[in-house]
Length: 548
Image 1 (cartoon, rainbow, N blue to C red):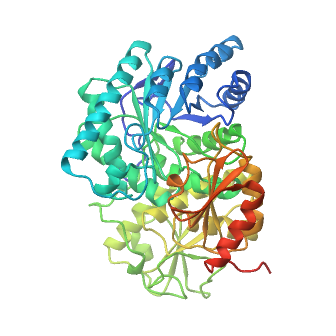
Image 2 (image 1 turned 135 degrees about the vertical axis):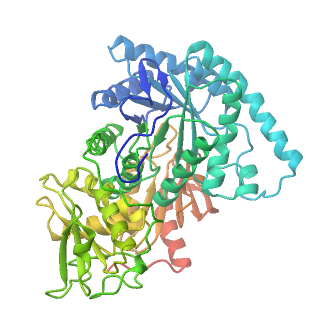
Image 3 (image 1 turned 180 degrees about the vertical axis):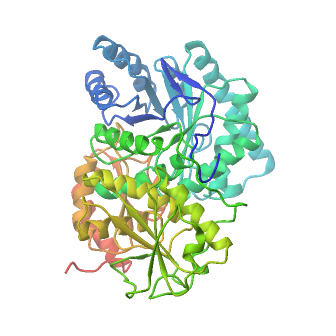
């Protein structure tokens, strides 16, 4: 794969019912129901809504054996209604549920972090070599029956690791790191390969976009090193809702898709599941349109990602500022200090000292062309700061947000750009500023508002998550620089909100537990008391200011 010229990573093929994932198949889009999986009709109807929106796979939670067994009834109900969308069972903490689901649906998702290893406590950080090996042996003993059932029923397997859901055993050796996430899944993959079971898709997610992208990079590198080419599922877990959720998802998923990585995707939004599908399709189609594009001139030798500090400071752009400025908002260069350059131009055109380069591209792959130009410019000794100027003719604001988040996000995560500028008839000045600020926050370069790490809801969720998220947001959105997790159940919290400063987690029907980081502070209180208690906790820790 080229860093600049788009091409898909060639993965092995996996068959899920009649659907092919990987190989030459298009990137598949999927979502997950938020119904109780014991509700056959309700689950079938929601799966149909997802399929009608364009979803190609539907995942349902299977907390126990009863829910796993009912997957067969849901599938029959769908088939009776003329819908043959493949169904995926989502299993945590329960190998027996996985065994039942493998005979009842088309694909089973298990989490290596909690399939066999003891539930995470975040406290035990010491395992002897013997204890470590014993747990790997238990993994093998629990996994082999699942592989046998999957073979018998032609059921595919998804190995899904999430940031913050690693076992204490893995944490003891690697910590809560990308390396630990990758090793957690590689342990399972090695066993599968030894058993010649290859109908496997890998997902490795985080709510922190930087962690998610870095971990997928490491996963692909490690699989390649060990001679594996399994398909990869992409998603930014707990992305939230609205513009923020769409921007975070587009930054993470779009960056990897642009590099040719990704065979299935899910845009995880705290909204109705079918709302995820148009977003995923639009993002997939935007990146896929680069296929077979005109070749981009590549640097003579691939340089390391550039440092923003390599540029001179001109009118407040470049120099020691660690994050890109917002062109036209934070700073505006003086007249005569601007040099407009197309990324198809020779780098010599950027040689004028004392100028801020505004770099444009009309190429179908603007990211690749602009990154190539910048690297060739730096290699030639150029030190002028570079404004990444993206122009979109689209008149639909949602479309522009997705494209811009994918394009700017990729370049920012790769270290390019001293300033950002966007031009589009779909965005007024306020909308442009909000979008660019959101992209900077998603890439962890500059925090300007409260960030909500919110699960998309599923059958495990113990309250109305979209309504609860709206209430928490209304009370706290005036705060700056905080990350607040709103999670439906203990499966997704506290582990999967590992990056949050505070957590609001469903503990039972009408009950909530509150966390400071990963530490449980208030256990199992009535939901009606949870928001005032969260505000009191914020005040106690000095993180509260009164709204203006």
